[in-house]
Length: 402
Image (tube, rainbow, N blue to C red; front, side, top):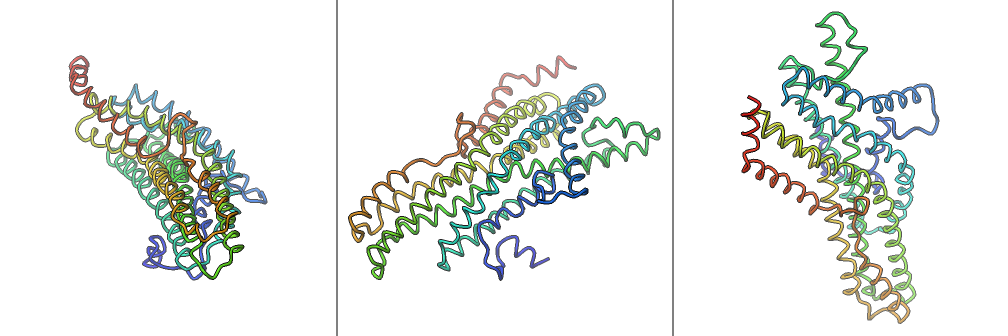
């Protein structure tokens, strides 16, 4: 167990040299588990596995929506709104999976680009940075797994202690069981399994942008280091310095291709998630100010913090990438360009113009994906809470209800 923890948190060096593509192994493994990534050869069990996964995904909106409608009639409003918060998240989940499935081939094609980028770095310090990047990407995935599965554990343990169902899903075949005790445990077991499956799907949809952007950050940082060393080695000839400059330009072009692919995939999925976060914000404020008790308010705020985490990882890495890209033209300016020949200096001027183009991710070109956007959503939630509290919205409504 100690060795496993060292491997996860990057304190243990692997015997085999790692590459950037190792950062994505766990992503593709989870995509394979949920039926998005498939094997090259389809067998009966593989087909059955994929069919079951997509059947669960297709059925999830109906199960949660019908469960919420029934909860409005049978459960207190606070509990019904708690189900609605999850219902909103689940309803958009199928669309995010379809988008990823549609672009998965493009994400798979990035392996060759990252492999070529890795082959340009042989210095032990540069290889150590790649190894550290792989460890950090794994760490990001494991942190998301811990947070999401902790939420799932708390959901079903709270329900079982209260003697209730987790989300009161619409499960018509299970409801045919005549014995009430057997029916409760059958429904509870199905809901717990469904919850963990959807948590895994939600997790992979939220974490993959952060992992890919973190890998891009590493190579932008390595490229800036290579550029800053141009012309500083007196043992290299003018031709060799020129070839090194050309190789840096090719690396930058390949990185821009990676950014283009990752941006195309994450643009729509993150836009959907921001939309979901805004909708859940309204439900959370309504629940916390009107219907929920003190314990319910704490749980509601905790759930909304988890919703912010869904976009927080990608926004943080995107902001850090913007900061890394600013260093590229500075590295070009501070390199030993006087030691380069005339043709290389002209090429360097062109490279500086290209490197000054801002690298930023956007949500379908409506707004940028960075910490400012994520924090503005959190700020809006506190502003809305303060406004509703000052207006006495919760108290007045409670008096009318009572």
